[in-house]
Length: 294
Image (cartoon, rainbow, N blue to C red; front, side, top):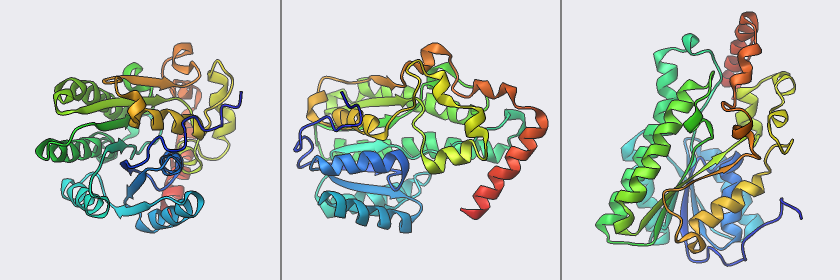
């Protein structure tokens, strides 16, 4: 069986409108592509409008669907509200919110400034809260039902992980929000679920996390019992199921898709204990250089 193949039937999301934060690249782009192939209208958001517009044109050409690029910094509630209004103005409604926007970097925690820590918390936890609150209030006020919130967390949201403490902290908060609202908002016809991916390498994010030859030194596939990393279509298949009507009885669940990695050894980045102090200096310089050039 080919696990890179598409799972759902072609019209599985027909008539639905889905908002994907961080939808311009990486896993967000992969999920958006599949949603469009399944008949959904999709609004993609990030801070980089040019990237969003290029992605939207590319995916519309590939799928024949409608993809709306909307600039939005999820850290600011007023921008989230404006993004929601623009989506409703274009498509008439929103059926699903996919909180995918994230930020992360590896570092010993004692090397982090308060602002660096805040940056990750603000994007991941505050951003997910802003979108969830804006969309939830909208659906409840309009008495719209059969809505879904899907949050992308991580396996170290419940195990913790050294060297990515801001991300682990923020993702744990998102997971708690997912489970809490699954109970509180079920009466309004809103389901809330999460996906916890293991290693699904993307060019941009993983180059920033593990620059240079670190990807070779710390081969994450070796930590996975299945001895491989995830294919983007595998994650897209799961996300499409969870925003579809086929998952109507799934609520408050976090589904792990990691090849058994966290069961083998909790803390995706704990292996970085082996990095000597002087290498952290080199690593920080490389990460700063990539940020400056991006």
